[in-house]
Image (cartoon, rainbow, N blue to C red; front, side, top):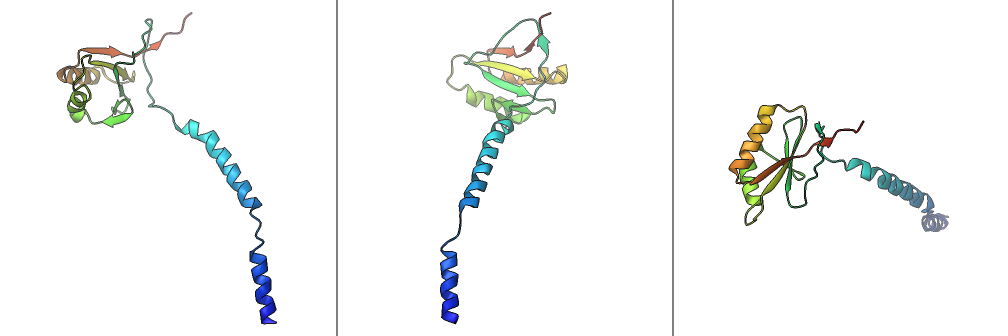
Length: 137
């Protein structure tokens, strides 16, 4: 009788149905495919608006200043005290040195000037400001 029970167990294990597992995996794959683009948001900055419409060229570097006073060089966070050396490293052996500032409108004028001063000390030739265009009436 024991031998018969052992054979019955092995035959049951060989017939495991994996269809529910595949269904669950497909549902999870669809959920991640839908939610992944929503999780890849950029750096949140409320830009001031202006009449002029200017877009940064592909040649310049974009520095983003958030309302919490974090500085992002493209998409990497940089400490204010290391900004000068990072800019010098970035523009090493480049002829055209252009930086575009993308600063939150709630930042104080003094902080923006402090960052611009560091940019100029690093040897950057041109500093531009990125703004949001005013809505047309």
